[in-house]
Length: 285
Image (tube, rainbow, N blue to C red; front, side, top):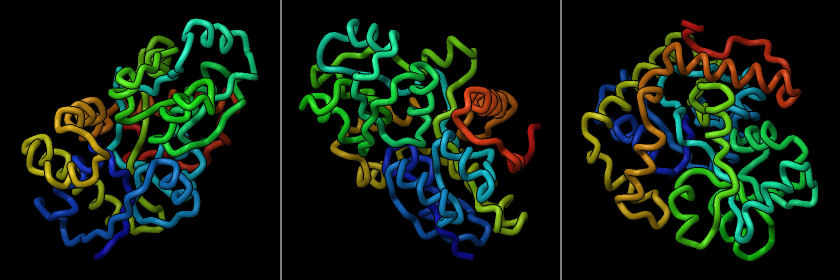
C-alpha cells in the first residue's frame, strides 16, 4: 500500500523518517511517496486534506482536526525549543513597545498557522502588524530593515547571533513559565479517511523509525545532509537534539496534557475555532 507523506527538509524530520522512507525497518507493507515542504505549506496542504500523512504545526492542527487525527509518534515537543523574537537594533526598546501594545512594530512571521504565531498572539495579542515569510528568509528581512522584528524557528535559533541579531524574547520560555508544560510545536497526523487499521500501522512504523534513528543516529547522515540548508554536521545534530526526544517516540500522558492545555488556552483566547473531534488516535491515555 502506497501512502503520501509530507514533512519538512529540516534535520529533525529527515532524522525521524529516514528509516521509514528507506525501509531500514519493517514498514508492514506500507510504501511512501514523500513531499518536502516548509511548515506553512504543509499546514495549507493539511487544510485541503491533500496527504495521507503529514507534519503540521499544532496551531494549524486546530483547523485540520476534522480531516486528520494526531499520531502518538513523530511529534516535536520539548523544553527550550520555542520560537524566538529577534531584532537588529535595541531589543529592550522593542520589547517595551510590544509590551505596551505598539501596533506599529512590523513583525515577520513564518506563517499565520504556525505554533510560533500562536505563541506570539498569546504573549503580545496586540502585535498584529505581521508579514508572512518563509522561515529561512526572516533573518535577512530583519537585517535589511524590511521588518522591525523577526519570529524565528528551526535552525535559525543557532544562526541569528552570528549575523549580529539580538533576542527580544524566547516565546518557548514564556510558555514554559506560564504553564510548566513542554511546548507543542509540530505533530504527525493521519488522514481520517484511512482505515483504522492503517492509521494504527502508520503510528507503529513511525515509532519504529524514530527508535531506529535513536539507536543508529548516524545511519541517515547523508540523507539528512542532502536536505539541510548549508548546515554543518554539528548544527544538524544540535537541531536534532533540540527537537527529537521522548515525545517523538510517544507523546505519552505528559505530551497529551501539554497539547490539551495549548488548545484549551487558544480556545479561551479565541485564537482557534471550537473542536468537535477527538484529537488523538489513541485517546487521552
